Image (cartoon, rainbow over all chains, first blue to last red):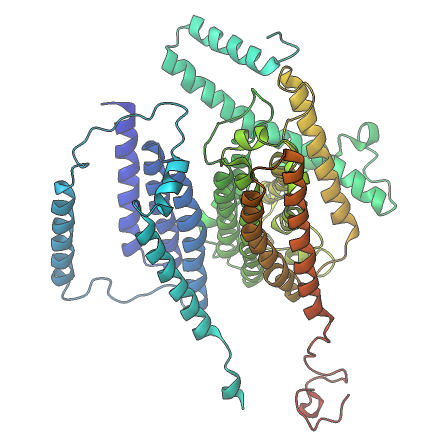
Length: 173
Length: 407
């Protein structure tokens, strides 16, 4: 077993364990912190795949912004941060079944993809992959449409948030 | 390469040879070399901070017409060492009900987030931690880990004042991160790379000449990111006790203290790398040691400016601070990001001096227009809240009521 595989197994174990902790731990704040650790594990995985851009973006967007958002929303919405109720609902087998089916579908769809079984090739030193990524994102033959759709989605979320948050003047009268 | 022109490579090669003669394989040499590099890059700045604390105290006391530390050692040079020993032997007090892991993890994260920035800074041609191809993004991402440290400190202390101070600090940091990111994109655009080494090499002339307005905004935003005056309202020394770190004592408090000083210096490092040409200077390519000297002279100048601003400017109120960020700095940075590539494309065929002139001109123009629009709103009379008469709480005193007699 190579060093990279050992690192992968360790990181994957930590990520899965902290993902499990996110949903089982009772304190909401601790759940958020475990989520940060899980997301960090994903960032390390990107780093081991030589996708340094994704690793850094993972830290920046998920850990930086979303973790802070989660923490803020937890602190601003709930007075008691510990719940004492049941943690497992009675009909737990139904969501479990749905999750299992979804996982199966995704796995089978991905296994049909030809990149699935390919051996990883180490990038030669000095190759810049970020400009290629940038060009692919705005190239019509590349990912321009998904990129734009995602931007529109984010814009819609932004406008929605402003609409919810704004003071309406007519109401004050 | 002789020792005097490039000590870094020479020492590194000597060390690698030493390891190889001891009996390490090539991978072993690499791993041990990396570990030693990490230790040097982590311990060096921490020790350097001791000196920085002395410099800062001296400069600030000169501004305030005092002498500053002058008893321990020549010019009070050993005062920080005495303080360090004091802080080492102080008692660690953990408040009752503190959340143990976040409480203890917070000071570590605060220091680590600052030290990690040093890993990608190119100190000279041959001396840098990692040649990371996403260096600028890395710096910003690591900065958000520092915010995590503050959140953990405010949450873990089990103190409502620490929690409130944490909200204020984090709100400030997140808000000012937006213009910080937008401004650091301008050097990235000019250099065509996210790699800090490439950004330094592309600075012909320095980016502060090509994009002066961006550099100014970046400087202001850096001040806010390190929580210095005029943006030090989260831990205003004369008004409130402290910020999110009130419940910390002994070495844990010392970690926050060191992180704050180190962050100031690190911000100067980033500014010098992005806008002042890093290690560039006459002869720096042939003699890397010269580049090191140039770099630290530039950093010293920026650091001194930061201290001057810190020592002289009055503090902003929280609404003024947020207004400055969201209504002035962020729109200007966004406008620069639109105008800059446009001008760059228009001037693509022209000689370098003309291109630089056009870019700098457009940059400054955006700043002036944005500043005019921003201050015109401020020139209007601010909406008054409450009354000038005391006591404030009487209903007839509230100005918003049209029939109120108070005016």
